[in-house]
Image 1 (tube, rainbow, N blue to C red):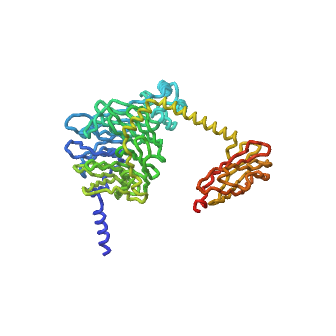
Image 2 (image 1 turned 45 degrees about the horizontal axis):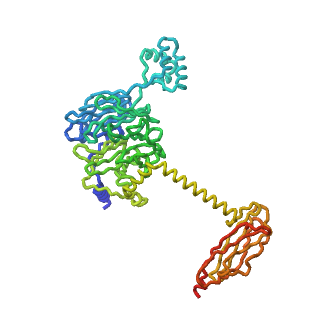
Image 3 (image 1 turned 30 degrees about the horizontal axis):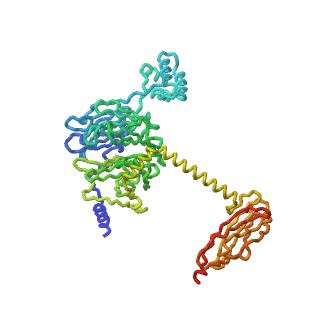
Length: 589
């Protein structure tokens, strides 16, 4: 019984899985990243091949490998480490077979029909004029190697233009090696060359899958180049505040396009067709380690084990937290189903699939995944290809019966919170009103300002009138600063009226004050309508009680005015209007 339990659990997990295990080769000896792997129909026979830029050991055995099915079809030796790889159509010639562009150092190697076709070299950079002069003196033997090193170190600390690779290597040498180095290189011209950090493709003038595409490359010198697919000339050049690390391109060069770049300074920049510099800037909370585009949104993976979604203009939409650090990212674009999701490889040997911020599937892998690619492989549309940290190759095929739930499988708030509101479209009245405001903006602003000034003037006049007639419940007199509020208690016909009077002066008592009531004698009666107030000590609250009798049985009420007066003056210090309630006792009787 115990021996059959693991077998049953394995069968149940395979039955519940949405993927078929097509192939796993733990000794494929593939050392690569997601930027150096692509799927393309290289022979035009309808069967897509797997193209891999293998980094080898990091110093040797760099190769361009092409897989057909589960077997290695061809491999070409690369002269330097590949930093990016992409397949693109460079012309309209038949048969429509794509070329493969491999970025390596300052060069782009273009392969057509799996053979070397063209080599593009990045434009050289400006060389420091002081550096040229110093090396020319060394060439004429006017200075010795020690003096050359001192002068180059002085130039490196002050010059705006960086030194060339030759000078930097010379500054790293030991004293006994300097003279040999100078004699070897002093007669050769000085060049300053940048290297490619990332590569992508951009449709030239049509959005079709088989349309001609331009190459987009990011360089270490903080610039982006867009290359013509046939002549390999620079069509456009854009500047960045930092060196690019990850890049995503969408649109068409002749119409409109957007380039989203994650740079080494931790920021993400969005460039458009009409801008030579970034249009928008996104500042994530931590360093980006991956960037992909799903529909019109940008998904960024960060070092804080989190996934962030942004709009095309940089507005943050959502955040998802991950159980382990991110190792690689990719896009799942199943065109036959119209389904798009984000694939995230994690350091715990799992691949998580996210649709927006919802976790819809988890794929277990035998080792940590270093690269992910999803697309058509062979004649199968839904193929997931992964390489592992140990050099293994994993191929999985999406089942035709697989259905991904839209709900999130992780605990948290309900999915209803992430549903977008159905905002109504702009009506014709709204558009007309907007046009009217745009055309008459100056006149409407002047009318608004005029009404605002009138409102302020009326408010100021009313305030002055209140101060002059002492109609406010707070005294404006500097010598007699008083505050009063009134409380009415009772249902009627008898009411208890309590006046709370306070002297707000810092240290000066208030004396010789009295209170007078003004009311309609046909509605109310008071035993005492005038009485004196005792001395008011600053800061204390003095409650003064009196009783009011309602004389009317018609269910009506009126205002009783309270005046605080000072002996010998006719103008009151402050005034309070008390809205008396309806006498409920008389109404019920």
